[in-house]
Image 1 (cartoon, rainbow, N blue to C red):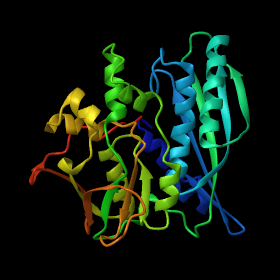
Image 2 (image 1 turned 135 degrees about the horizontal axis):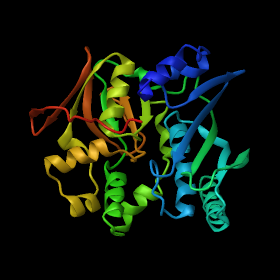
Image 3 (image 1 turned 135 degrees about the vertical axis):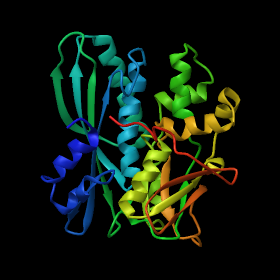
Image 4 (image 1 turned 60 degrees about the vertical axis):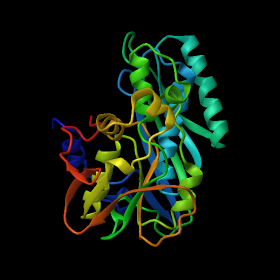
Length: 306
């Protein structure tokens, strides 16, 4: 099993409970006598999901946010988290992490309910995990797989800021602060997810890259998808720092670490919050990309894959 997809496909033979949604969604949805319990678990690995010199407070914030972002994509209200933490013999880093964890949980008003700690071998990359638990009053919280022929696909906000922040840090820069913050301290759009959930046919968060995540929604829904690269919203900070040309737009849509919400709705839907239409679903299969009314070949990589 050389790829993440191959490993997950093997796990699907085990994950047969309906709550698992065939391991094809952002979270599991467990029916508890009419109340939908939404569960998700994400990990952060040093050197993969955060830089070794990222502040511990920011790493804790990111761990919370990336998990709550999955709950947001189901329109769920967070009710608690469980954490797995590897101790590496650095008390000051641990103390900073606890400070950042408290700040993030206080911001989202979510309690820490428990978890586990282990001692890691000296020199190993830090490994952190969080299980987020949410509740939804909807009979069927939105999945990736619900898009319909003719639906428009929307994104809630600018794409590429997280990728941009990482590039700046790798180049030894610490500004613009908004781009650095987008990478180190992403925001989970919990309230927007709850506002949108009853209106959408499908929804997920953008974590691995807009193109790869949009393709996952189309594949799960059994549809073709056409995206307009020129319609994808970019922030003013991104444009100032990197530009608004085709290549930097491709960088933005393949970079990942955005945590905006991506959703499919009927064309005449009145949305409860601001979002930008970037494409349309149709019968068929596959992802197509256009820019200034011209077809573009898909980049070699659509986004991040483990």
